[in-house]
Image (cartoon, rainbow, N blue to C red; front, side, top):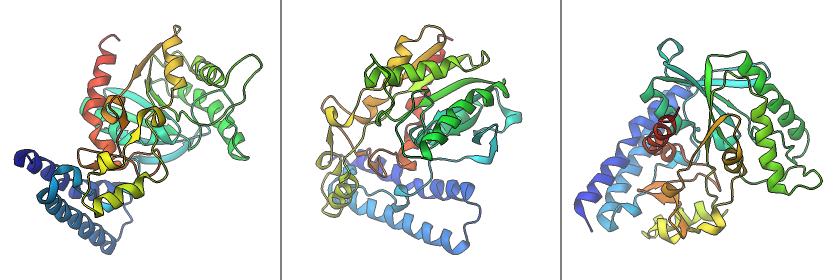
Length: 322
């Protein structure tokens, strides 16, 4: 046991209640006083549990706030539909912005929004969230049931037009889930078809998009992992290790990263925070006392925010060559 380290993790976890409540009220201004009171009590109870967990066996046993599994992906304001896409704002207000950026992709883009919001606020950027569940920004037709498949095709087609109408946006952060199947043309493999789909989608963007930053997709857990974490915490076991998933199982090759490595026509770069999520052998469902996933492959809001500082450093490295 390291008392200093344990206290650090306790303070780290217990600072989340006011932050989470503030964010939930921002995103859901219609929350009633009674519901807010319930959330406050639940979060304070989690903090109290954290204290007993630290006394029992250190930071790896600290429970996470119960809202983490159901909280939104991060703050987003002024929801609207424009040019065939749904858009909302994060980061600083338009009149304060030094740069306009967009987060583009499927739900795996959305779960990075809380982290990118931290970066945007620190850098003075206005962010636009241009996402569609189940639809990566790719011209490869994903094999989904209708009407989802047609909806994705329309959305992918509408995205370049949105950016042509907004030339002030010069940088895209793109993320897409590595799983799923797409239509495979003759002579191509599934992976090659996915790579081709991303490159073709990027080629249709207007010249006002000067930079594309690919955020490497995240590991996937087992369907039983969230339950495993709950059970481990109840038994005062170390959920980080008890519920870890082998890296070779959790982490699939990312075709969007491969597309970025091959792309020469546009300034496309890769940000990969996998070392924050995995070591050489395993990927972890609890990191720093915070639960990473709310389901098989989506971050909790609390954990996504903890990725803000390392994401900022990675983005700064990418921008150093712009």
